[in-house]
Length: 116
Image (cartoon, rainbow, N blue to C red):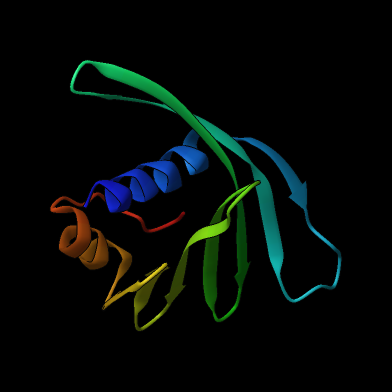
């Protein structure tokens, strides 16, 4: 559960506070947003800093968010289409009808994701 909380936090924070670079290739079927993120995790009186990278790719069919680490590679993938949202991590796969429902299912809370 701690790893899933970290990954979800990293996903949300990467969208909100990442150093990003935009790649919008004219005529390409996909828009890509890529960047790096850094978060501070405070738990049980201890504090640590984690960092990684992300790639958010969107097209007319849906969106895909890959969260990675420079050493270990892809940590998680969130795929969203009109009919479902899928979270894939090492050894875990969860699916739900929407990103909000998936967040509620995996983290126990949700906030509106429409428009991200």
